Amino acid sequence: MSSAIVFAYHNVGVRCLKVLLAHGVEVKLVLTHPDNPQENIWFESVQAVCDDYGIPCISPADPNVPEIEQQLAALAPDFVFSFYYRHMLQAPLLAIAQRGAFNMHGSLLPKYRGRAPVNWAVLHGERETGASLHAMNLKPDNGALVDQVAVPILPNDTSHDVFAKVTVAAEVCLDRALPALLDGTAKMLPQDLKQGAYFGGRGAADGRIVLAQNARQIHNLVRAVSRPYPGAFLETAAGKLLIWRSRVLAPDTVAPATSRIESDHGRLLLHPAGGGILHILDAELNGQPLTAASPIFPLNLN
Image (tube, rainbow, N blue to C red; front, side, top):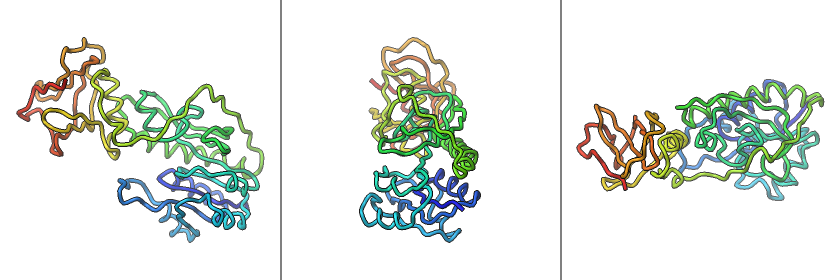
């Protein structure tokens, strides 16, 4: 029986941990994160899975410290796996894996290496993404590929929609690749890093709408940061506007002299300075639902 130490968090962590167990891997220890009370916890709990299966689980603030490194080295696992764990694993932790250390990343590597890969893919209007299992080294997300599974991104999918698909893709990818990893026959393909780029993390401030962009670009931002993320927003004369859901009505209309939101036959329409028309389907103004019946339209935004 092969053994592993698993670093895991989030839905991908839950599903991939269950794949290891389904294949009979002895999980000697799981390292996860305590939930942050300041964060919107919309995903499943790795700790709960460990409780269900009686697997030892710890949540160190930083695993890259001598006492944790020594604890894990004493377990002498065959493999180390990282499934949406939020810390980079440094050389001493990678070295404890006698047969290799592997990470599951939420993109089709080498594209969208780094943080928030699903959100970045949606923001850039990609029509597909996926999950990639790769060998870990000291640089993020650039080790050789073991396998990857693609999923489509539909034009109105939100990041939440896509993350659900990527979670399934990660499960399928690991389930398909694991037998060859366990029996030592897995073939790994080096990444051509020139075919992708590294992206950093995103915060609430990155949801600010830039009216110089066109309707399609703004729509991509809306769906990239919609619930459960903080949302796309504008500061207007009437207060803070949050847009949660939208649809592009016309991508290429002539740009208006002044960006505005208007009420048109029961619809809220955004006319950005970058051109096009965006149908606002779900929005809030100062924390209250915004509808076409609100008495503030037309609302000039420049």
